[in-house]
Length: 368
Image (tube, rainbow, N blue to C red; front, side, top):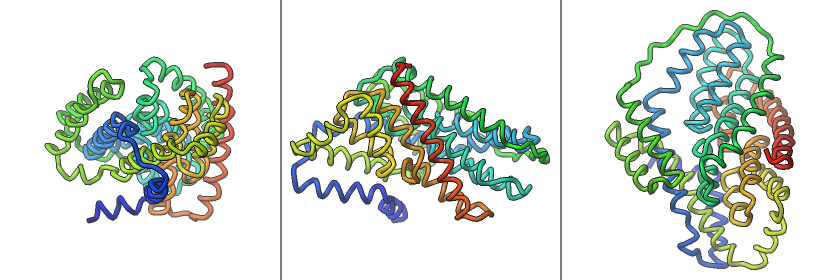
């Protein structure tokens, strides 16, 4: 019952179910419009992420790295870069849920700044998640929908990552270097054998995303591993996200059968530039996962959608699920004004959105 309550408390899922039910009055979904490869990939990804979380891999890395940070600038750099790397492999949600409480515990202990570092952790998680096909669930949809191969995907992702890192380096330069005590390393034990097995399953999942093997096998392997390690891992999976994907496939299957709606959407995504900006703007009001599925069904401009959907994760609190988790986690763990954090966080988020929007537009124009 706890799991069911958690699923149906998800605001994005509630909205998605509502619009899906409305769409059923106009048409009936077609079975072939449900992208089962995407659903299987997302389910497998969510399972593997929860296994890694259960094994405390990220906690160990965080404690090991922060033990060498002697000042506030180094501590910010360590947490932000770890957020980027973790976002690549574990996704932005798990990253912010793990790293923000860890950082805030240190910040409260030594009276360190809380607002900027937490904001940078959230932004770093979004940047890192954009870099891999599995970092953001909508990237899995893009790879499946447009049959994007390994080399093409990373030809889009690498320039975006490198420019984002350069922007962050500029931000790091302005962070003061206040000396802090060397952090004590927490003694967290990890199971090396299970970590190696999980990584093997992760590589198998990688092959499934790019259709080297049928995604059903990595999905079954990840579920079997979770059950063998601890069946309660399955209770932690984000089933609300899976249901959101499923509902949106049904919703879009329905509206694809309404000529007037299709005509309007086509006018909004009839070029690379319009697809790019439509994806960014729609992400601000409906989150980047459902936005990507919606726009992706009506456009052929895959790179524009990749850049728009990932950049659209910045900005508003609902631009990305990770943004909402940043706000929630900060509220639960911080010791400074929540209102002050929200104001400053919002300003920094939209500054980041504007800068990255220009970056993405330049990448499209110069075909980088």
